Amino acid sequence: MVILGITGGVGSGKSKVLYELESNYKAFVVEADKLAHKLMQPGELIYNKIVECFGDQILEINEPYNIDRVKLGEIVFNDEEKLNILNSISHPLVKENIINLIKQHQSKGTKLFVIEAALLIEDGYQEICDEIWYIWVDKEERIRRLISNRGYTREKCISIFNNQKEDSYYKLYTKHTIDNSKSFDYTAKQLKDLLNNLLSNDIIN
Image 1 (cartoon, rainbow, N blue to C red):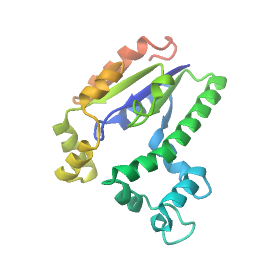
Image 2: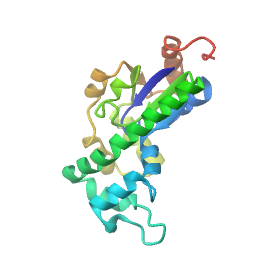
Image 3: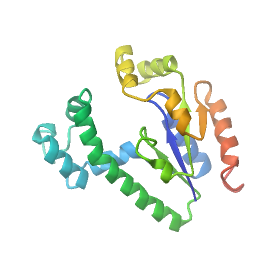
Image 4: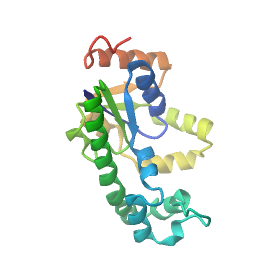
């Protein structure tokens, strides 16, 4: 089984790349952020630890008292110390769950297992992945997409970018850079060419 890591900044179009890998290359895709959301449900270990650390102020008013991610985000977004605390709680448990999923899919005969996370490199997923690919789009195009697709302001985009690593960092620590700034046909061609070197012919369309 090939384990492929996908990373990239907000607005780089990672979701579309993941859909391409899932639909055309039979990949099992796990998105670390979505998995973290699942593990933050009431009764889950991450939920209990976060509430213990940040208090009832982050909970929704009505049962089942889910964590209000907007409230939590407001607390940690501009406080590096609290953000580090949150990451130290959630990231190891997410990684542990991903490792368990890998073991399950190895036994199932899955050919391509894809992990997507913004902090793949920082969280040490090089130890797990056969390769990590960086999805690249220049900042101005990412801003345009985020304003158009998510309703973000330019100021919000820049604020998010300032909390992420520069392109040079990702390109230094990843095997390949996928240019996703043009048509998706161009992106799909890059994916196919790279996957030809990783997967057996019966997976490649």
